[in-house]
Image (cartoon, helix red, strand yellow):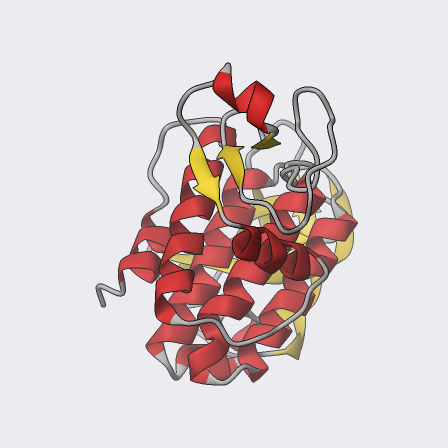
Length: 249
């Protein structure tokens, strides 16, 4: 066994046996890790707010070779983020971000993804309720990009012909980006991506925050959902994303 001390964020919490909880953590140094916090339900002294969703801090994890579930020895909380739980739009957006990180990141160091997650949760916690969907979409596209799936939107992904910024373009989630008119004729399907939507994506990739009307939010949520469906390693639905997208809470 070895002790790992690393920055971590709580992305999922589940009760375990009579007194413990299982947490899924996004860590800076070891990707996503599943840990058991023994006694977390019976006493608040040892872990306190460390078992709260979206809490961030320094985790001490006892790694067990060949095991999928490790022991959480301690968790020193530095940022609790209670504001993410006080408004349903903000909470469901944060949950969708957490779900995507859990599905896209495995047990290897991913510091750039971790930084994008932490920065995104901070931005979401500070966002006005009307801006939470736009902020969440920006964060999700940044996470997707840091994982290595950032789509091409300024060139044809097949022939690499530059696309004019003012032109609409055909977007294929399966191939990972936009196509020029010639290549689009050879690849039926996909979705027409207006120039304004391409400009929005470009700004989100840079981490910008700006208002977006409800129709545009819905269109971008659908685009991201279709893109994620093509790049996840299994066919399991994104349940938290669905709740966030449909607003069914």
